Length: 361
Image: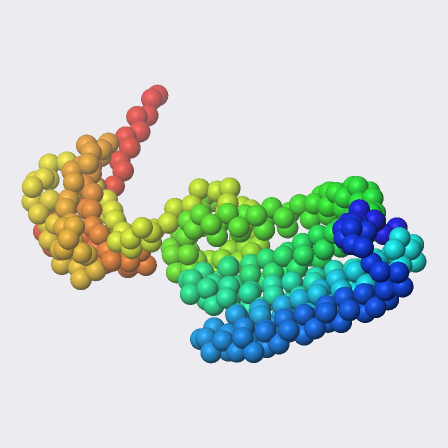
């Protein structure tokens, strides 16, 4: 039932504090009602001639639309408030009038809920949508409608709670309990989807990679990020195949980003030569091979490192840098081909494993 400890209580206190002349209740109520309607029309006119007029001259659409969305709710709020005072003057403490006032307040609450939903739509469409379009990732474009729906649900949910509790004094604890049980059931039923969703959220805010980056995850899969979605991330691997990986997996994996913070990538090529080879001569030939490639950067300059005395070879490593990770495999192929040709021409032996087997009688 409608409470007398909300707005009607204040109205009743206001009415009881006045000294009305006998028989003047109806006249006073009429004056209050007319005054409220006049004030409502003045407020409506102010919105029309002032706020909307100046808002229409700005370069933004949202301010005009928000002002237009607030115009009618404010008009109805002032009008209904005058009707409440008038009703309390003529019928003080009347139960039936209290119910009617409760219904009017409920209608007013619904009007404000619809107005807030409209404003929410305006903000997401004319403000936030333009902001997310400026970002490089598409995930925020996908998240925006989801966030809008969440805000809409919250507006309706709390608006209904305000109407039930504030106007009709309904017990909302069972409603919260039911919502909690339903939420747990949904969470258990969609735990994989939820984990993928929150994995996508973590990727969006942490930004370990972005579309166009070349990454490698724990299982050794290497590819170029094509799209980061709410549930999954799509990468194109070296075989030009599209790999779809759930965000929950990526969020809990070690990810190597070969493009960030910069695209320059180190490339290492190892080669072994026979024992007895001239180390400095081999080092000079390998350095010339590295510098002869157009893919290798001059800064940092390539260099050759004598790594190890192996079991059957002297092991060298050529250290080079390329502009983009995508050039790595092309460079490795080019350098290995040149090494084979140069060593064959210079008579430098590339050994192969030799094992001596002793036969015992």
